[in-house]
Length: 222
Image (cartoon, rainbow, N blue to C red; front, side, top):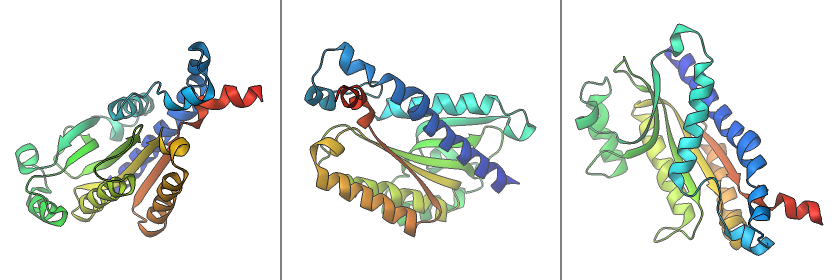
């Protein structure tokens, strides 16, 4: 039963991700460079709707709640989504996975528990989370680590959370609002890395998108 609910929770998050881009981002973002009077180069370099990673998370979160609110079954009651929470003994000393938190830190070579971007959990149960997700939003050069290294770090975190049974499902989400137009090699490296994860890490759901929609009006003018 718990695994079925976790699977449905993951499906709701995927639906929220798709709704954000299909029904919101892709419809709104092409209008902004035109209203600002920007040329194509300027439009590529500008950012709308998601100014930072937090904006992306909150948009996905609000759509997730909208989808969740339409679920009438009792099994979907008391589910909440949380952002930027450290998974450690201080925060989760009463949870059923508390004895595995030291193993989690060891596997990640951390002194403290990892901070997780998004956690979906029952508020009235101290069992494993339904889902944990890591979010990446590339809108400027990444340093000191490369984009590939940053993706790798998030995947290792999700694998450790999954393997220590902290969460029943894990998801990685990426929006590229920079490399697709500045660095074709890095953009291809990112795509190749995500394809590798999809192939080799069957337990990790990967969602990715680029901001090319902001050039849609320029394409129509051609």
